[in-house]
Image: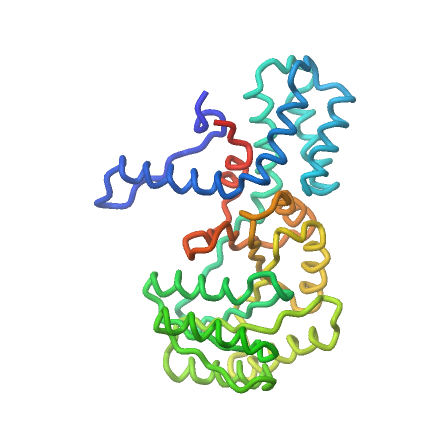
Length: 333
């Protein structure tokens, strides 16, 4: 049984003037890369589940309890785990478990059902010039690096981009953003260390508006969700933007480090309660065995997962695809 028949994967139609064989090889390469980058989570999750079913003939209560434990240990979360187990029980009943493909297909389907509602790619409207993206998150989540990767993606799509260095607490953050600007040949608006972040971003929005820039990406200082004064600063930034464009920011993104596991849930809840988050970017999935946190976020937070980060390059910042993600975790070939 192939991956395509096992998981119901449909090939995409190749673009015009691109041979089907070349497109298929490209798809295979992207999937193989994703599978490899999710290796730590896959090994933690799939190998453990595979061992559970070895020699077992029926999906009995003991096996279900062990399956729950394995999923929870993989940071899938209690709520998502219960839903997966319930759906697998309904799909498999008490049938013979000799066919592992059937078991893994049932698991794949249950995972996709949880993840699919969060598969909502960000739509950048070029009619809103500039389309303003406000980046938020705690220190160390990879926010500034993610901004650079997004900027590269947009410039490769032919969009003009401007960056706003709103993390005025860290000189290194401004320097990092300026380095991305030089590399991509995009303007960066910044002020001195310790400057008012709202002022920096206000200036950037004015400049981007006057220059007809397509996309403005605004960095902000990393902050814990418990730091009420800094969270209030984000609210101020949004108010100041509204004086120029009542709809800005058009997208408020929260960057979460997948390696923080269940702590990411508390961050997402608090940032969303304070700001109203439009989407999540989950970074560093390649370096952790806690990738199961994606299921907790999808099940409990119910916010769009715009991108996942699985490596260092801009290519490794990928739009989230539920079926592809589940396949990569469960692929045993």
